[in-house]
Length: 58
Image 1 (cartoon, rainbow, N blue to C red):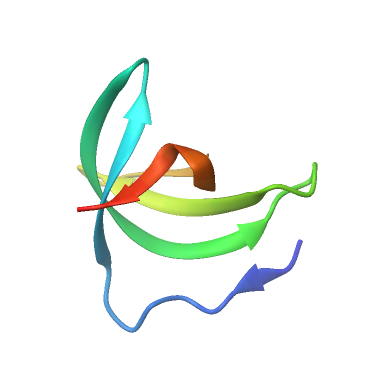
Image 2 (image 1 turned 60 degrees about the vertical axis):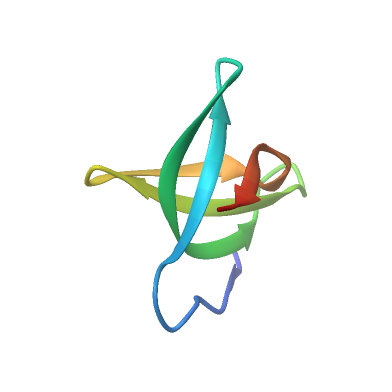
């Protein structure tokens, strides 16, 4: 899977999970298997790929 360039430093973002917005840090971007854009987010040391539509700037 191709991965887009990562920001030089982690970027503060908020991620919508279960209808709530939680704080995290954007570490990278990629195009997912289904063709949708995804963001690699870190939250308290946990890494997860999240659909870009569920991420907003802090």
